[in-house]
Amino acid sequence: MKGWLFHLAVLGVLAVLAVILPAYHANNLARVLVLAVFATGYNLAFGYTGMLSLGHALFFGAGMFGAALPVTLWGWGGLPVLGTGMLAGGVVAAAVGVLALRTKGVSFMIVTLMFAQAGYLTLIYCNAVTGGDQGLVLPGAARQVLGLDLTQDGSRLWLALGIYAAALAGALGLVGSRFGRVMLAMRENEERSRMLGYDPYTVKLKVLVISGLYAGLAGAAYGVFFGYAGAGFATVQYSILPMLYSLLGGAGTALGPLIGAAVMFWLIDFASGLTNAYLMLVGVVLIVVVLFAPRGILGYVRERWLPWLP
Amino acid sequence: MSFGPFLLLALMEGLVSAAVLALMASGLSLVFGVMRVVNVAHGAFFMTGAVLAWFVAGHVPGPPVVGWLVALIIVPPLVGLLAAAVDVLVLKRLEYEPEAVIVATIGLLYILEQVALLSFGPDARPVAAPFSLRLQLPWFGYSGYKLFVVAAAGAVLLAVWLVMTRTRFGLVMRATQVDRVTARAFGINVDRVYAGTFGLGAALAAVAAVLVVPTTQVHYLMGGDPLLLSFITVIIGGLGSLRGTLVAALIIGLSDGVISMFWAPTLSKIIATLLVALVLVFRPQGLFGAKA
Image 1 (spheres, rainbow over the protein chains, first blue to last red):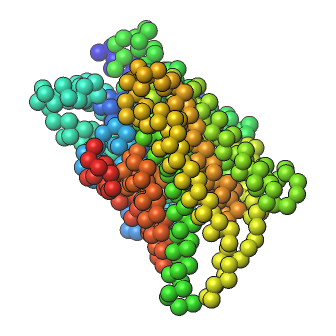
Image 2: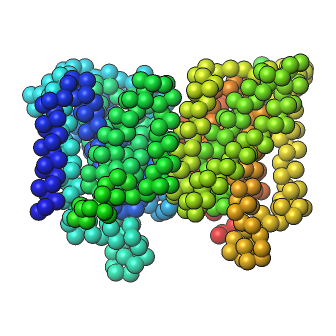
């Protein structure tokens, strides 16, 4: 109960921010929330189940093009393509997972990386449909969801907040459920969980598909919100970012991905005003976190002060 | 040009990329074999070597060959030292935990690239070839320097093999590879072996870079493709098996040369990456490696 109230309060604070923030930062907050949906899904696989994937960019990209292609090919509207994008993320995650989950650890990282790279190259290769390097610009007519005009900053932020709230609730529900405990068991000791009668392969595949659905929804939302779908969003960098957000915010904490995404986004936003080598921060933070703070910000808070944090 | 000479040209180009790939991938394979960690920053060390070579070549007076030779002599040890420092400062503290090392070397990759962006800038720049001999075949002329690259890569690989099999350092390295705990019990300084191995691996990437820059251009993002190809090579050849790596480099270099001459290079990359993923899934010991 305490956990739910706490998270409701966090969403309340976000809603207040949505009202008071100036336009530039409101727009950034919408981006952060969408990326946080992506990272929350990544964290389900990585933080809670112990699957360190380097292939989530593929699921994000699948979601983005799963939303953009129905728009450009058949002229679908904003709401249905959010669904097709989400579905595309899940389907691709299932296809990758069926094969990749036969491996674990470092092999799993490399297999997912290779599949993602192949997917990215395929997007480039099929440039007649996907726009290749240029990508696709989505027309304003396709960017209407439930009466909200997503070309406007305000409505974009409210929908992003709604999607993040749903994603957070879904993650909290999943982690708190019996299945969530099995996920943790897989992370802590796969062999022992197998001995208790749980099949690691099916459990991990289910989690990976859920994670893919999150990534797909986030990719679709990013495309529809900001009116652009490009192969650049399927590059390795978009696999590394959710990992970074989860690690920094706290792997295996519900709000960690949001905190990680927000901190990194504004750090990079600040640094990009100073130098064109702002991506250096990604490298520095990765190394610092992995060396000195493997539990991340919220992991530390949970350890010291708030042991009940989910 | 008719098909025969065209194929010959493709094979020669393939041989050059195979030689460079073999150098690069053997460094990656060495590190994986001895330390059981994957160095994602390997391509960034390659790029660092190329940038340093450009810098050295530009600051040494005299004909291009002098600057290039100086670069060949001092750049690989510099990059090796940098890598050894990273090993001591970062990887050792992570206790070589495989997943943590991957995350840390991803971070290192970003840092090296961005440092290059800051110091070297976003533009691609050429390095002058040390000599411009042209080999005139009946159908086409071919750069003599490229053939020299093949020979030089072969010589370096031979030297690596001799070091691994004939010297005390190689013996110590192989002992650490087989069993690090026993090696330590026999008084081998495992920490130093690891730092040396990581440095040697990066130095090999730097040698490849100095050899290759006169035929291509220096750019701060140039490490990506060689990294991917080295991954592919090491995995197809069997993780940690140096011989398998060489065979795989030859196959992949040659087929890459031929395929990208006749078909779209993107398609060949898609096929190669998918192949690697499937090899890791269904035959994790590699196509040539023995069953682990």
